[in-house]
Amino acid sequence: MTTMAKTIAPTAIHALAPRVRAHLHRIARQATPITYKAIADALELTPPNTIHQVSEALEHLMREDAANSHPFIAALVISKARGGLPAPGFFDAAHRLGRFDGHSSGREAWTFHGMEFAAVVAFWRGADSTETDHVAPSAGDISVIGDTAISHDTAGARLITVTHTPPKNDTVGRCAEQTPTTDEGHTA
Image 1 (cartoon, one colour):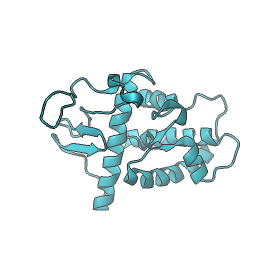
Image 2 (image 1 turned 90 degrees about the vertical axis):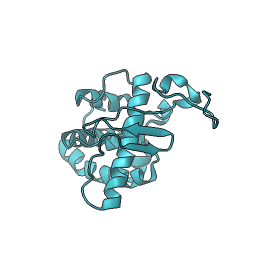
Image 3 (image 1 turned 135 degrees about the vertical axis):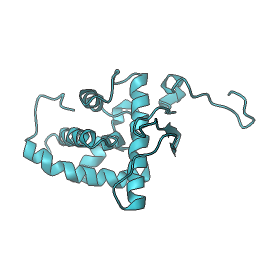
Image 4 (image 1 turned 60 degrees about the horizontal axis):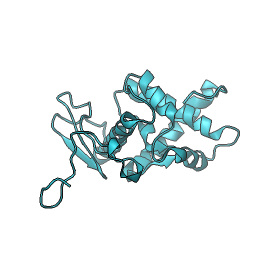
């Protein structure tokens, strides 16, 4: 997200980041992605570089989320131009934070984004339902958000199974262990 040469003052990012998080928290309850521009518009950011302002704030939030072992709330934000994926800077930041190792537009990107999106929705819905700090899922827990199913390893933190289909039903975006079946239980 810091791919542009122009940078935003750190004080401006620190002021904007909580506003972005609060807006995304509301979005997480709906389990609906939002574009960078839609956030800039909703927060009534003033030009120039409103999308860059959002990107810088999102990277700041990703660092906070990583430090707190939370899923990336930035996964709720997608690029209109990328057909449902976040901008490449999301994946660059996730790589720098040790959570992603792959190409920003390959199968790994679709899988990782699907897992983070589902995890952040489940995390914030769980936090809202208890109105206390969210408790990490236990081993064997399964969450289903839309067409995405996730299960948790023995530490309860790492997501290990996902179904997330890129545009045009490209099966390359599905994890190998997922096989669609018909209502009769036959492989589709």
